[in-house]
Amino acid sequence: MSGNVPAVLAVVALVTALVAALLAVGRLRARRGIATASQRATYEVLHTAGLAAAPLRTGLDEASAAKAVRHLRALVGAVGLALTDRDDLLALDGRGGHHAAQLRAAARKAVAAGRSTVLGEVELRCDRVDCPVRGAVVAPLSGPDGRVVGALVAVADEAPAPGLVQATLETADWAGDQLALAELDSSRERLARAEVRALRAQISPHFIYNALTAIASFVRTDPERARELILEFAEFTRYSFRAHGEFTTLAEELRSIDRYLTIERARFGDRLQVRLQIAPEVLPVTLPFLCLQPLVENAVRHGLSRKPGTGMVSIEARDAGAECHITVEDDGVGMDPATLTAGIAELAGESDGAGRSGGTGHSIGAGHSGGPGEDTGQHVGLSNVDERLRSAFGDRFGLVVETGLGSGTKVSMRIPKFHPGVRAGS
Image (cartoon, rainbow, N blue to C red; front, side, top):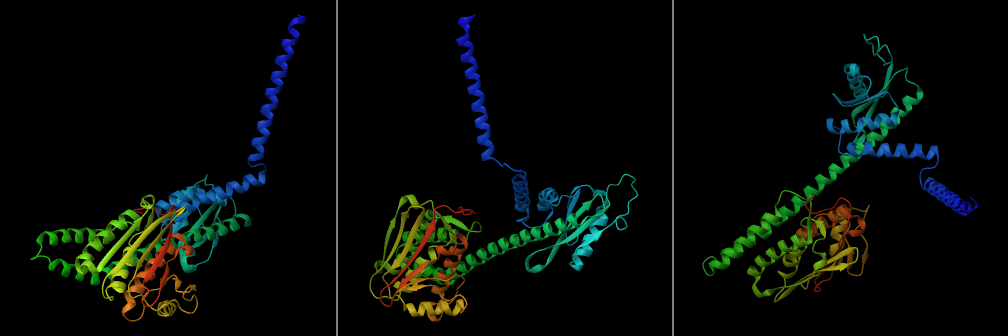
């Protein structure tokens, strides 16, 4: 027996060590987790709010209301909750379904008046003996510009207490903010589509006429060349006027530019020289649709067409770590930096100015279009692209223009390789 004592002690020591290790791991996990009731409550509220926000950010309709109403009820702490638009009840979660007509009528009145209201048993009469509904709080939902777009109705199983009233009003205000953000997102998408249409309209009258004229000049003298140019022109227009996607890849944009330059070289002959320097690793980078082509067209149309002799257009795209740096440069006639700045400042207004300027380099301000004299199209293209870059990636990613009379023009942009919500075809 005495010989087994060391073995027993060894087993006891091993078990003790394992228990201590398990306790240590448990304490470590507790420290890393949500330790207090207050922290857990905060987490639950934020998590639930996030779940409700996602569908509301798509707008107020039956589908989004059905997804959000359960989470909104958890935020309010009501036994039932309904969402309505200006006319109809869209979704209801929890108790109170047999009062749908009364809740709908009360919501319409609150929407029309633009004021919240508290309902009691008198307003919610019911023939059911087991009816749990004793009251409700109706709060309007305000969308963009304070316009009432619907109502949030919290159902109570007792006379609505001040706490329920306040929770309903606060949740309705928050939900209204999400709907306003949804409208803002929709407005941005409509603006982006309008800006692409503006660029397409700019391409149409100028390039198409010149392209057809150039193709016509080869029909009799070089039919095969004319056929090739027609195919290039067809592919270029198919890409430029496609009906889907605000974003594309650099590779696709460069393919379209190559077709454009093929047609322009047919028009200008040896007068137009092109230099490309593209890093292969940046070809998959996503950027706004029709982001480079207007810059190349500006270089040809405004820079080289007015220049006697040969002109060079250089397009460079290089890898810069987390970004892709792109430049479009011509050695054409250029323009007076003061004219560029004045044209942009005139349209920007005194409130936001023309952007910063350093020497002949100018950061284009957002939201500008148009310009004086023959350079109107140039300002439209630059300002349109600048606005779309800033809208997609942030104000740090606008265009920078370097130019001078007789010194050509260089337009530079920075494109982040990865950005939330930005992908080709989206």
